[in-house]
Image 1 (cartoon, rainbow, N blue to C red):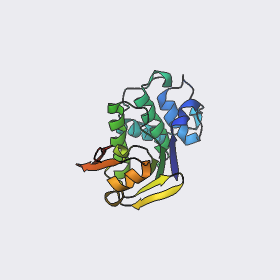
Image 2 (cartoon, rainbow, N blue to C red):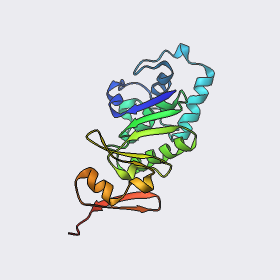
Image 3 (tube, rainbow, N blue to C red):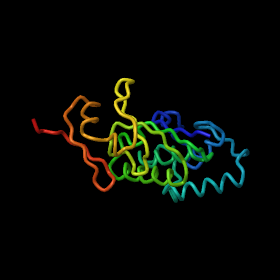
Image 4 (tube, rainbow, N blue to C red):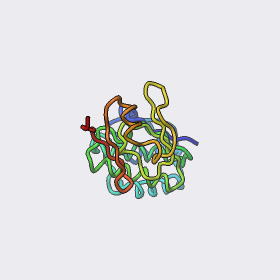
Length: 183
């Protein structure tokens, strides 16, 4: 089973749909439509577990009332409701504030530790979680580097990827990047 999260899913959700219903709609493969008669007691229990694990307890609001960070959590919860083995994410932290970004990265770490393989696209190396075991750097469809993060993420490869002189460092398992002003 494969789950997916793309930020454009946001536009498919009805604004006056409750987040619990959005998550449950993942069982029926719909956006904005839920037939509650088809939902089982086991599925309701799974919903409660996911809400607890995603930090959404006590936040059953209409979708339009949620913050951007809460919306992302709801949509990721929807994508894992069927317990996929693989979760595909496209720029999951784009346009989030710092707290929401780090909350989401923590959730991604938890998902990995729970046995879900994450395949995600990012333009920000700070979004590469510690549990990542493979990184592929792509530029216009060409592979610049492929391998373990410790081997692939370095100043030379990132400078080549972005065609810009960069300095890359790993600090306590988190990647940091800055312009390299040395000439």
